[in-house]
Image: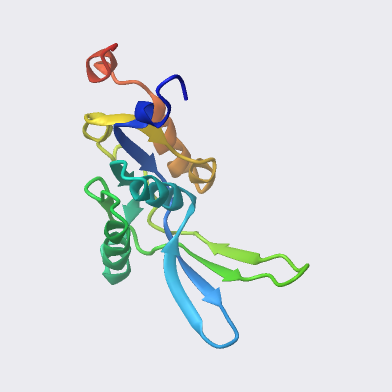
Length: 167
């Protein structure tokens, strides 16, 4: 991290990723919550008091609204979330016990993030105040459109130098 340690991390973190509805299968009850790799990173950064903005695509329905509220509850910025698509991806988690590992079944087909296309996110606006950008390998693997959006995010715009001047 350099000589300054955590102080070098001060700045706005922007995360592009998947957030889904997770169903926890328990013997006594079925519980549902929201989660995902990038959402977990965003929550951890916000928990450390760092400013975080989450970029994703969520459906414009009650589940999408609940997901936004859930992230806001952790201090995650949601102003860059794009709304659209038919559904939120889900995954089912069966907790392991003793030597038996946990099992996860994903259902992301036709989800809002799986049907995202280039041009749906205004990257110039997203990166205007950003100091850091993160996504995991899962996001581009979800669909061709998601991969193209990740490529679009990583392609420097013509005014890249003015967005990130040398310090």
